[in-house]
Image 1: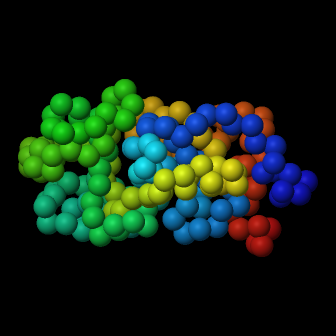
Image 2: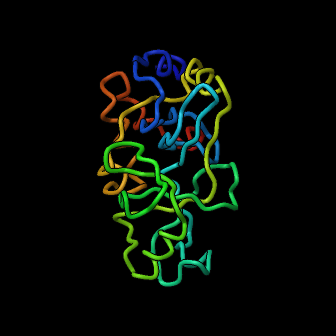
Length: 195
């Protein structure tokens, strides 16, 4: 079966929206976006803001910043924009002032002082918070153009899927749930030249 045919059979009808997940098509070879799962934390007429969920870096949070001593939670590559800034999602709700609920029980951002206080109290864990270097961003209409080119499939998110699925399995697990039209996505080799 030709690669073009694999892309053309897509029938996913979900639209991008805050709280949805973007799954990159399997042929995207980009360092940041190859087999990426991106949580859309914001999507409106001005553009989109998202965080790549399945690209852990080789260091823990406490190894890259002195602000979080003793906080041994993984650090993730959030995207190519502002890669020297720290972003976070969490399930801590009202404990973090000014955070935005993306979907039921899952929040992004908020007051960093609240996060630092919870860190001092040793209440930040990999089960309730995730930190990212940088983010993925799209300007007005940019995502719609990428969707027309079949660069992404869209699915729904839950806090459990995000926090309880191993990052190396997340893309494969979610593409399998998309339905039979996507059944070949996870079968395609990461590097077809080595096949």
